[in-house]
Length: 128
Image (cartoon, rainbow, N blue to C red):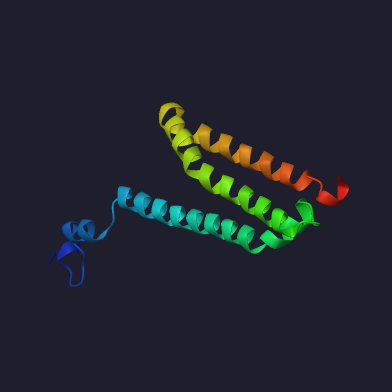
């Protein structure tokens, strides 16, 4: 007596397997959504850290004899970054559509690295 594998009790048929198994496109979509969520969370964490440490940044980077001006100057830097973020997304998003995402991603990462290095090398107000 011969028995086919698919007719065994509990065996999954091809149609059942494909109905429950996600396609490669669904897997990539899910991974992209998770990566975007993590990136967005980290970005908002970065903005929050800057906002929390604004008084300390103001004291270190601007004239401490006028704390109101120093705080407003620090918040102005925050505002400039916040305003230019979507503009950069428009510019680099269109550029990525035209010349490719990988090169634009590497370029923006390099620009952020150089900007972070410049922030780290900037002397505090006390050295002026």
